[in-house]
Image (cartoon, rainbow, N blue to C red; front, side, top):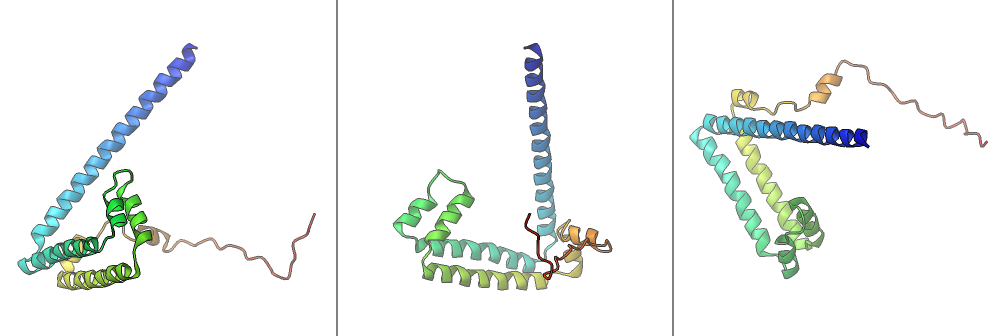
Length: 162
């Protein structure tokens, strides 16, 4: 009986310790991202800042335009508290009409064009300095390594039935 209690206490301690470490890592990561974002914004020229701010404003306008077309059912779904944001979005997407889907597609194309204009305004130095770390990491690691090929079954050989 004492061993079971000791094991339970030890397990609880390890679990709490593990949660504390992961929370600290998340906090550190969040702070690093915030710092990188601030540095990025500070490095932009006034024209680039305007382009960047226009993207944010455009996103807000698009969201408001879409929400203005919501039905009562969609409004109820969008304000429900029982699901996560991802769950609410998934449920809403299932209820979109064809016109709403076309509106979303149009908004995506406009946003994509705005992003391309902004990216084109960045200098090579800015692109290099603020490129996402780890992007394509797996490909770089696999490059030069021989990938194992899967053996194909010969179609002329029929599996035996035992």
